Image 1 (cartoon, rainbow, N blue to C red):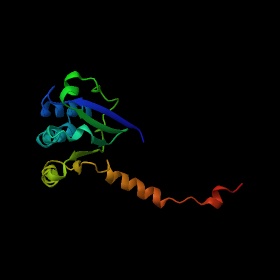
Image 2: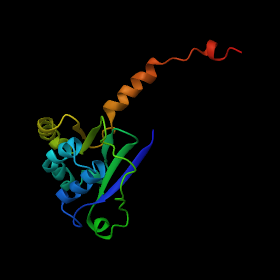
Image 3: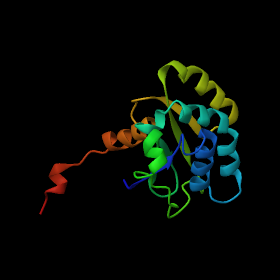
Image 4: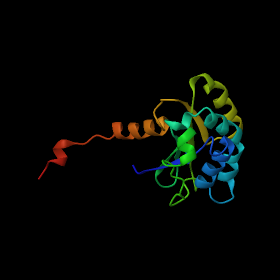
Amino acid sequence: MTVLARTIRATPHRASNEAWDVIVALLAPNAGPAREELNRVTGIASALITSEVPKDDPIVVLGAGPRVRIYCVFNEDAVTGDNAREEKLPSSPTDGDWSMSLPCPEEDLTWVKAALANKSTRITARKVGEAVGAQSDRGEAQVVASTAINREVFLRP
């Protein structure tokens, strides 16, 4: 699986809602339903960026093309921009069917999940440290587990 990563400069270089705006522009560069859906969760996403969870646990987008992981840098790293990588993606991962997983501190998970459910069907939250894209990965694992190789047929001359 191909993975693209971007690192966005957050506080104090830019406010958390401005960092979210940069993320939205990367993921959905054109006006449309995907951009509208991402904009509906601005407050929730900004709160998570403010808590600095996407520093080590990425925001993950699964959709058209490669998996996209988005991290944020904070404090001096955000000011200097040395580790930032904000350039445009080769294609929009929100074209067609897509989903997003936001990392969330365990103590906020209940309210964040409920708030996201009221605003989006594609954007969910996962506990910090939880496997990225666990739902999708489980689906892939089920396909792999249900696929058996018949060695006798495979090794037949």
